[in-house]
Image (cartoon, rainbow, N blue to C red):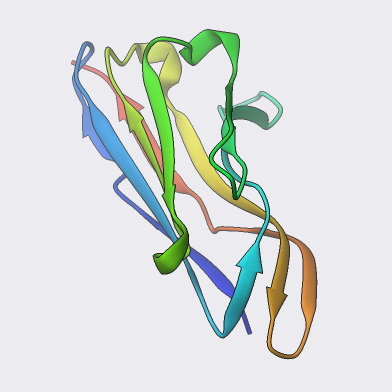
Length: 121
């Protein structure tokens, strides 16, 4: 069974930085796109950034210039480096992976359990 395990959330001051990590565990052969979404209280979940297996990246307008998504395919891990954090970045951040192929099954999509990022002084 494949699981996405996130880490790196926490409390950070405005203007600070944070690096989130998400590792996919299991007997994985390949993963297509991986990405990060976030959901603030009372709001819908929204895409923050995504990266394909080939390294092509995309970002939401609200993080362009402040975030960098990267991945290590050998470790089935995706990272999100966020800088110049603002209070409005406060949310639960979820890792997402699409088309995960293992030695036995294929998952169309998986979500991590979420990690809370709080930006506050």
